[in-house]
Length: 126
Image (spheres, rainbow, N blue to C red):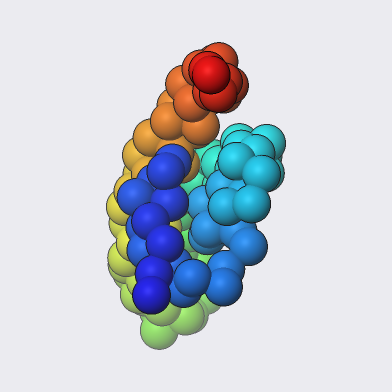
């Protein structure tokens, strides 16, 4: 048997205490879900920042360094000014895309958890 999370909709084994998003199946608490989503959002923000730096700042600095190195050693200048920036740009693009995807997922999870927290607790009416 499986249990469907009321917050994110994921299926978990029946014996699970918590969903991957942080929802507590026993108590219905979503505090851990909010904290987990906030943490994932911070990680995604850092990943986006690194991706932008790897796409813009670092290759530019290496390109300038390669031009300064060229009069002394052409092969080293080629490696520093062409190959390294290309590899960093690819790594930066991967980080940027992963960060954007992670930010979208974390933002959606955080909105869902906060909206669910605002709902009043269910009461049994006799």
